Length: 82
Image (cartoon, rainbow, N blue to C red; front, side, top):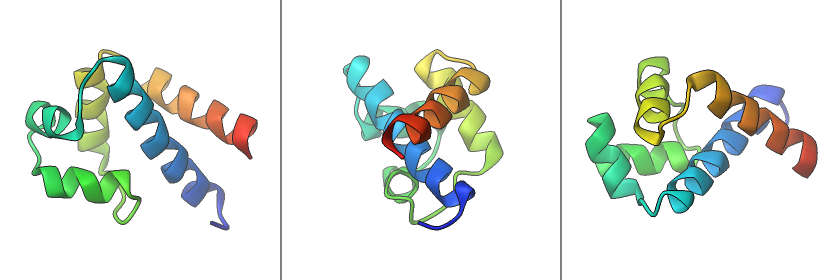
């Protein structure tokens, strides 16, 4: 991963996985709440496809955090892991 955007997408996917684990949820649960196919969500989580902004907002809502908090946690992950 070369660009900040690519690192951020990877950090976001990892943060979503952590948020799911903290809530005892899985990708199937999140996909249902967000209204996307589980396979589509899986592509987002594997960073094979970028998360569209409307879906990002729905993911944050389903996880009970604001989009800003989810993004801040992802950016912090880049700093600590990068």
